[in-house]
Amino acid sequence: MPGPQPQGLPPELLSSPEWQRACQQRDFASVFRLVKVKAGIHPSRVAALCGMTPSRVGEIMSGRRRLAHIDVIERVADGLRIPGASLGLAHRPWEIPPSASSGQHARRSSAQSSTTAADSEQESEVESGRELDELLTLADGRVTRSTLLALRSSVEDYWRRDDKHGGASMRPAVMGHLRYVTQVMGSVPDPLRRDLQSLAAELARLAGWACFDARQYSTARTHFTQALRLSNGQDDYLFMANVLSCMSLQATYDGQPSDAVALACKAQDSARAAGGQPLVMSMLHMREAFAHATLRDAASCHQAIGRSRDSYEQARGQEGEAPSWIRYFDETKLIVDTGIALAELGESERAEPLIAEGLRRETGAQQRGRAFHAFWLATAQLQQGKLDAACHSAGLALDLSASLDSPRVAGHVHEFHQRLAPYARETPVIAFEQRMREALG
Image (tube, rainbow, N blue to C red; front, side, top):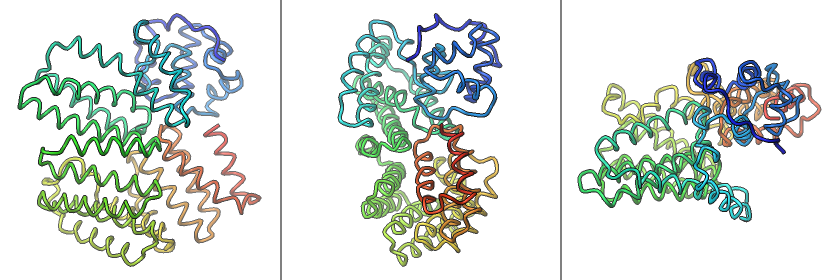
C-alpha cells in the first residue's frame, strides 16, 4: 500500500516546460528524475508513495521499463499529487473539494461490490463525475453561444487525445461533459437547444468509442444507442451512419458478426439518405466486409471489398466534399483494411503484402492504428508458419502500444501471445515473451 501522501509538488516544478513535456509524453523516467532533483523525493520514497518496489522505480528511471497500464499511471498521479490533466487523465479525487470527494468515496465503496470488474469501474466513473456536473450547472447561470464553442473545442481535443494516446482514460471526463450538456439542454431556447443536442449526440458517440477502446462493449453499445436517440430529428444521416458503423465494428469485436452485418448495411442506408457520399460508402462497405470475414462468408466478404474499392474510385477528386471525420479513410487505409479482412478470412498469402504495404506507408501515422496493423501483419505471417517474421511484427505492435492507453490494443497482443503456445520452446517466441514482460510488466 502507498505510504503517506505528499502535500504537493513545488509550483515551479509543475509550471516548468520540462515537467509539462514529460507528463504530456508520459515519460515517467523524466518525471521520477525531476521529482528527485526538484522536489527532493528520492526513488525509495517514490516507490512507497506509488505502491511500487524500489527496483521497479529504478528500471523505469533507467529506461528499461515503461508504464502503460492506466491503473498504475493513476496510482503514480495520486501518489505524487500530479494533477490529472497533466497526464491526460480526468481530475483526480484529491483535486475535488472535500465535500464532494467524501460522497465519491462512499459511492466507490458501493461500486466495488458490483459483480464484475468492468461494471464496478463503470459505476464508479458514472457516480464520480456527478458532483462536478452539479457544480458546473450551478456556476453556469446560463448557457451561451460561447459556452457551446468551448464545449465543441473540448470534443475536438478529446478526439486528438484519443488518436494520440487511446480513449480509455478519457471516459470519466467525456461522460461528465455529456451529463452536463444533457442537463442544461432543456433550459435553453432554440436554436441553441438544437445545437446542444447535436453536441450531446457527438459526446455520446465519443463516450461509446472510449468504452469500446476500453473493451467495455455493453456500455459502448449503450452510449452509441444514446447518440442515435439524440440525433433523432436532426436529419444528420451521415452522423447516424457514422454511429452505426462504430456499432458494427464493436459488434464484430463482441462476437456478434451477424449483428455487425445488419448494422453496417443500415449505416449504408443512412448514408444513401444523405446522398451516398462515396468516401463514406467506401468505409461502410469495408465495415460490412469485416463482419462477413468474421462469419467466414468469403463470397460476401469479397463482394463487399469490391464495392468498397469501387466507391473509393468514385470518391477520387471529391475529398473536399467528404465530412471531416471520414478523411482518415485514404488509399493506404483502404489497402490495409482489405488485407485485414482477408487475414480474418484466412487468406493470409494475399493479406500479408497488403498490410505490409499499408504499414510501410503509415510512417508518422497515429500509433494505435499502426499497432493494430502490425498485429494483423503478425497474424497473417503466423498463419503461413513464418514464425520469425510474425514475432518481429508482433514486437512492433508491442512497442507501438507502450505509450497507449488502449486495452483493445493490449488485448490483441495477448491474443497473439496465446496463438504462440504451440511454439513456446522456439527462440523467436521466447524473445517475444521477454519483450512482453518488459513492456507490460
